[in-house]
Image 1: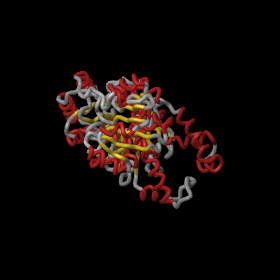
Image 2 (image 1 turned 90 degrees about the vertical axis):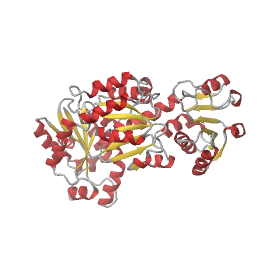
Image 3 (image 1 turned 60 degrees about the horizontal axis):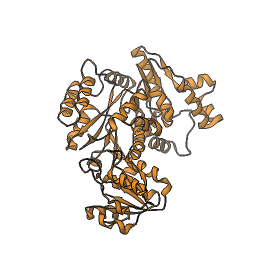
Image 4 (image 1 turned 180 degrees about the horizontal axis):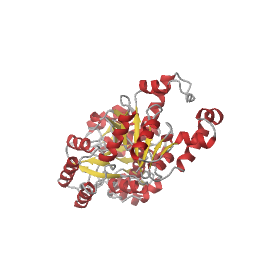
Length: 461
């Protein structure tokens, strides 16, 4: 059992680490203490002489050489900013995030000799650093514990309890099997969960993730994420939740203590009221496709727009048409506007397109206005092309060789629209490219690890 403690200064990592090591009989390693021992300098002296960059270099070297076997490891407050550190710390480990509010942190570290990392007053520096680091802390953790009102002994016992019992009791796991068996997902996946969650085989340290949608049976996320979890030595498993009721899904997620969810149609917008906080991009788009749970927090993110923007980065300033006006369309419009494109939204329901256009300051109209828009770039953000609507939203005669056609549908890999576009001589971008890029960003939100795009592509089911 390898246990890693992360968190801001003053959250109790060192003291709790020593207590936990004593309780479990495991060796204890404090990365800051190791850095000081190997360098012959205090952390303050290293920062003064070599700056933060010099300290981070030493920190990376120490983390890379930590023992892989059973032990308890306490880390420095900024260790999670480096995804390489996170990958090394997470492999074969259970990671606990220790948190505390600003007042408690300020009280605990007052009088510290550590150098400031900004020029701001003490409390303001704590607040700003917490704001920057919180998403990285949340991503890198398996479990989150608020230490604000807990003694080190209480925190240690809470960690011991989570290691022994986890967050998914037998009753919740039995409810999960019943839910999945009646949801219409493949029997092979149900049997997989039955085997995983059985009393004799269930590991309480396993963290669960899921794709949430209706339908969700077409998603390739379970196969991809489970392969990535195995690649990075993570004790995690990714499920498929298919149900028309979002409230029923979220209730089950809470009962199981789910760590994160990928959100697909039709819940990308309706899930927002259930979240405690949303990143700026997700708020601007008005849709969320990634939710990370940490303690009582449910944090929402949108990675779809990154998967759309990056493949089109060389089309800045061109004219674009987005087909559709739902959550995926909003992400597409946001991505295209970030590339300074002139965007027109076309949709079967014109009023929905108009409302989205007003929100982003774009032109809008019916699908019949496509020829008049004369776009350079076309993004299909409708489900047309995916079963049961296995057709193209555009006719072949509407396409020109100079166009770039990006179909966000990725099942099947070549949709009728992409086939028309390829035969016409257009540049085509399949939905799999968007999926790979948004999934890599999503994986980092889920784990704190930056998986290379080539690796993600190679693991696509």
